[in-house]
Image 1 (tube, rainbow, N blue to C red):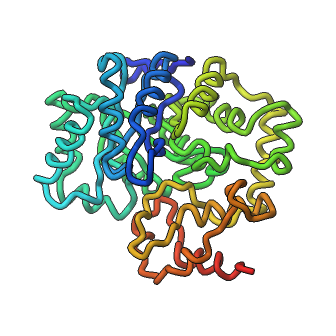
Image 2: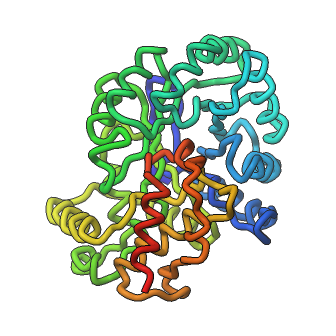
Length: 366
């Protein structure tokens, strides 16, 4: 496994990080713990030492599943990353309640990499009102948190405001070759690099979209005998300052593919960089909505299956035909349940105007 030596923190992190947001399920409500155990053990045996979860993933199920899976391995050999659910903070007292719940779910006494989760401009008020940074720094002094950081899906300008709050140990940003202009994009990446803040990458495959590109659109990759995943990960892995790239792996096949790729991941040639530019251009010409499938908008109080509808809409536009096998099926009946209440938009990291987009989906119904 390719490793990153992080001098600022005096640690070595696996270039591939295990993101535990999109875990396998036995049914809609039950995570497949046996499969998670197998996946975590395989990742560990193959050099992956960074495991990323969050209080809100799978309504707490992700933390529980990771805590159970980690019983198989030595806690001191790996790094657990977890996140403070900023929108659940209601008082200074709630900070300890939320943090202790995460510790209990994970069955651990400390968290290695702790993040203020999904910061945006609106949450700066919460940070100041409840002295969140001071609280987190106290947890560091107590040894409950080893390294303090944040994740962000907002603009470069918001990033600059966040950087004023603390001398952060690390930062987690959404970055891939389709997101170079926002969230906070290339400018955000360069700002963090300039400040020597280690960077963890989320959504390197843009919610799986960059792994599922049809062959006709990804022809420049095929001409160079490369896979969609290889190009997306390599584009990030060669960049200075990026220490770990998270992949939300949902099954053993994905883990095996990613582990193999990261064993000997290489910098891209100029020809390969040009291929990425061509594929990006092809995707942008067809993409309908900038949804990564993170599911922060769910559950919808009216039963609208927002992520699956948008995934079908985007996939349909690239595959030129709607069917459940290709993943391009669009559930128009579900889309029509939208009442435009706006509850989903409060939580969307991509700031998508979801009700308007659902109207557009419905307008294309034949």
